[in-house]
Length: 247
Image 1 (tube, helix red, strand yellow):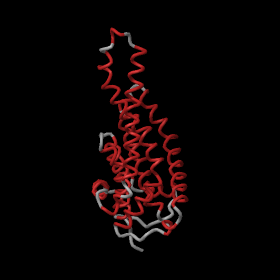
Image 2 (cartoon, one colour):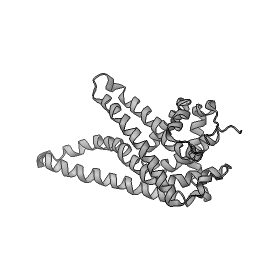
Image 3 (cartoon, rainbow, N blue to C red):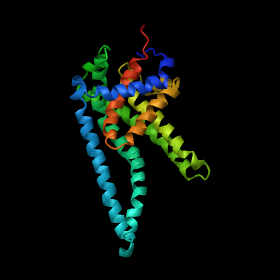
Image 4 (spheres, rainbow, N blue to C red):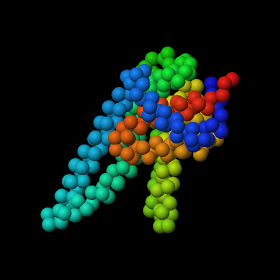
């Protein structure tokens, strides 16, 4: 059953920011620690793999393209590579981490909801394998939604004049998608599918996008980016729970 939510509360950026901070604090709660370490380990492994890949292939490419006497140019290019890695890390490794971590985030969202005083969802009684499969299927649908819209957004970077605003458009677009990503876990507790999730959050785009933009900025900060996905899941539960209207 779709929950009755207060759109005014959802659209409040202060409420959204407070909930994300609450999500970070909740990760330290003993009741949630067992459900946080696996996503954290997964994120650490993926980001470490990304750093290794960038370092390895960058050095290989520079060795192939630059003659020995231009070896000093390699160090001048590293800042550009570091900036590119931030974008690549979000575009690929964060999406992959969300896809692989979806089953764990579903469990984390359920435990967080119970910790915040919400009744346990009926679906929580289903087998772990079935819950994991459903989470992966839902995550794949969101990934398709993202990729179809990400390509046109990326094209803005190559249009003269428009490319000045492209970074802002890209940040806002990713913020909106990330909010759809992380609020899906608490909303799916009520049997709310992806189209209904988009309709609900579409009534509160300022607060919802603001939450997602804060998450996106956190994902660009080393070390914090490892904590951000599970914190965003826990914070999204608080975001939805705080806007519920009792029947």
